[in-house]
Each structure stands twice: as C-alpha cells, then as structure tokens.
Image (cartoon, rainbow, N blue to C red; front, side, top):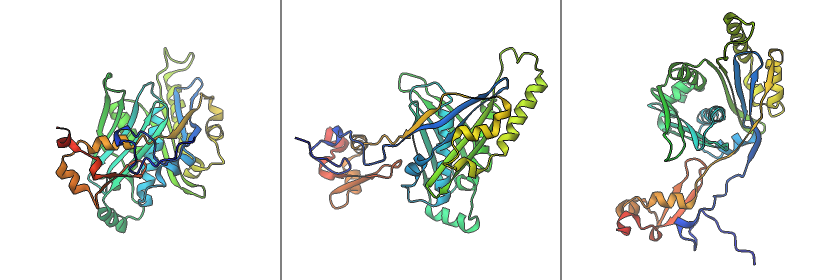
Length: 328
C-alpha cells in the first residue's frame, strides 16, 4: 500500500521534531554551474559561474523589489564562485550587514554545491531610496557596515572568518577590496544578475593572480605583470548580456575571452537548490521560546514560521509546541 502524501509545512500525525521532509521546493541541479580554468604559463586562474534556471528558482520566489533581487542574485553567484575555489567540508557564506535599506544580505554554498540566500529590506527606507535613485547601487542599498566571508566546517573544526568594512559602489568592488586588504590577493571580479525571457539569471567571473613556484621559465616579472594586465583587460570586455545568455555556455564564453591566452578549462562543478529547512529545524527554534512568547506569536491557535531562504510557510498548532517552560 502506498502511504499518503503529506505536506511537511502543515501539522500532521508525525511529531514536528521528527518531520525532516523537505518543503515543496524545486529539486534542481545545474551540472556545469561552475567552470574553473587557468591560463597556461600565465599567473592567472579563475571560475565562471552561470546559475541558469537555478537563479530563478532561488530568488524568483521572493516578493521583493527587483533591485533587491538583483543584489541577492549577484551575491549567490559570487558565493558559488568563491566556495568552489576552496577545499573544505561544510559551508561557505557571504554576509553583508549595513545601515541601508537592505539590512542583511546572506548567501551560502556547501562543499557539495548546495546554494541558498536571501536579503532583508526595510520597505519604507527602500521606497525612499528608489524615489531618488531608481537604479540604486549595492553601496546605496547596503549603506555603511561590514562585509564578511565565513568558512564553517562544523563544531570540530575552527571556523575561519574575514571581515572588512563595506567599501566600493558595487558588490564586485567590495569583493576586490576584501581580497586586496584582507588576503593580499589581486583579483578581478565581474557580476551580473537580471530578468531575462527565461526568468532571473545570475553569473560571476573571478580571476586571481597566483604565485608561480620558482617563476615561469624564461619569463621576467614584467612579463607576468603584462599577462595579468592582459587578463584583466579581457575580463573588462565582458558584458552582462553575455554573462546571462543561456545560449552562451561557460566553455564558449571563456573561449571568446581567453582563447589566445592559453585557456585550460578544469573540471566543472555542479550547483543545486540548497535550502536545508524542514519542519524539524523550525520546531527546534520554536522550542527555545517561552510560553508567553509563543502565545504572542500564535494567531487563531496556530504559529506560522516562514523560511527566509525559500519563502515557504510552516504552520504549527500552538498546542503542539511546548517551549522552554513546557520541558522544565
């Protein structure tokens, strides 16, 4: 007998703390979401991220202004590009927090390529900004604050975090500033996000100048400088339209840019829809509140919690949530 299909977002016979089913969100994988590469005999390596339909699945479900969604899409593509450059087990996250209309920007990617993110915005302050600047920059949306990258490998490993003040007009400029000041690493970053005929799309291209062991035979330091500047100039020719075009796969786009510079593609990496929420996770959050707080949250005898990442509502009967005092 086939068991009945249940909705994990609604109360059911299964206790909330045991219900680990995923909510009704896309089971979507982009097999070649990240294309790493390097330039042979040149001090350059990089990654090109094209989220394709994954971008629409991640940000299209959020009821926010396009300016906020565009910033979120850029953050998702950037996080995927940075995470896949590292060897780790766990999650890598980008977080920006400032005093602007967008009070929080967060994106994270696991070592397996599971990607998620969201932004929080103050509607009144956002409306005021848009009245003066219909196409606001990332700096105008975020305001003054900090920009952080975190690599979390679980409780048994030390968490690495780098934090800098928000500097730059765009998310790409903020990233360049971070690597220049915190990592002493030369980078060139291009980000794009927009709504196309196929829905929301987002893309990132990052190149890094890498040290060469013992130098490249027969090549002077000035030649390496020239090779890096050439790569930067080529990246500067890239347009948002090219980055967001589904008909222009990563391999072909990289060939356009670097075919004369010794382009050597590496193994591509997959990305997937990565929200990890479940009824059990949210039930555990509710159990940390006291009875008075839970009573205040309840409407008509039920508490509704919304996952920030996937925008899915979970409904809990007030009677099924004990809270801290109920376990004492």
